[in-house]
Length: 611
Image (cartoon, rainbow, N blue to C red):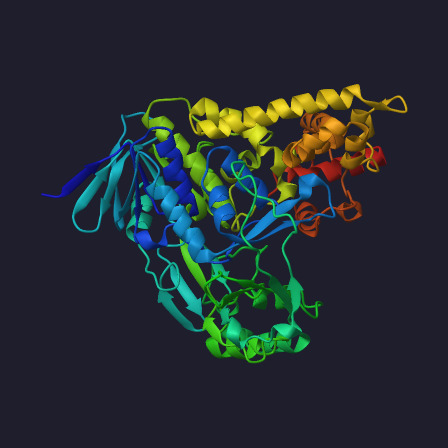
């Protein structure tokens, strides 16, 4: 007789989505099992050893504000912390941290193992267990559990699929191709077949990874040093400071000669021979794709990033490729500083199955099977941060559904996570989805620094937030309120410090000089207060603009409207709108690939013309 195990929630896959899903479900009190093909690869960074970046950092901090794991793990194991986009306003800042890859993985596994109500189990899932719903039901199936290799069955009220790139996966390096969703690991076909039987559409995407080099073979004297920030900024709201020593990264570039070599070998590149037919992430292209798409560029930056403190392995960011091994060898050794470079791991592309996410509800529950949830690359996204955000939403909703409670739905105006989920389930995807600040129409209010104030109260109401998190937020809120009272009371030249801080030339240091008691205000509280004050007027105008856009959805766009004349409109948006020629603003907003920010620029241009 087959062994049977009973749980409230099952999470299939222990990558970044699976970890957040399982931990969220367990925090909500659901007895949860996290099933993975290998317990030694929990939270593994399959590609870039880094967390955060522009747009992505907002997701990480929101996941943390909702009680998630990722922020704490990177704070404990990061080897370099930098804030990107510092030349722009705070809403565009993107904290990013290089990770010690193995330490990050071990820290994530530790956090999983220490989470109450959560069992980590090494199993290979081969099939889904479902039953038909009552006749006339909108949803034809109901999930009951999964079958695993070895004649065993896991039963649960809800199941979350976070299978990453492992569904019927094939890896490509030049003409060579092998089955596998990650170097050194296998693939699975049973889940894809089960999804097809449920009536779900299954499609294919591809992603890629660059080669890794031995640091002992690199001439670092030829490379530009890239250091971290003098004052590292934590990701988690539970981390006070980053104490560990930071490491440096390095920058070099490709050359016209390298581009010529790549062009001469395109007939051996799987993306150009037809060997790979599926689409990859346009915003993270392979080096061969860059050379073809940006033929006018003579070079592309390459970032050499250490994979950890105790290894000499270097990740070459910017040269993702599936070219043959001999071409990779020649190409790498033509890069300044890498003339004698030894490749430890060759780059490759991987094709895998995913389920188009327009088949999901805003809770990330399937429209075809009750209490079956999806998160991560199975939804057609790319990136650790996007996966973690979906995992938290799916895992929380699986636990809430299992308990018969109201779901957790984040709106676009509340969070980047809300933007991510709404984009996926409303627009679907025609390429791997990546988060950008331009996707969020409320981005002035959705800064990474205020994620706790926006989302931790919601997490507390649902039971996702630890007591310490709520206590810290209450203390910071009280500190900010007291500080705002001081700013309003003190005046210089008859103008309150609050109004003076609205001026770009007036600094926090000047405010402290005028009111010395402000010197004790924490750095985090001071930064948020300053950002709130400086952005207050813009946020109000932004919300007014968005409401106006809603009213203008039926407004006609003049025939022959020149999208090339719209300032700051992305080239992709110009191309799509010029091809479709939408008749109304509402129709323009539904064109694939058009973001709310794109539509706002069209509106501004129309108003400027008096159209």
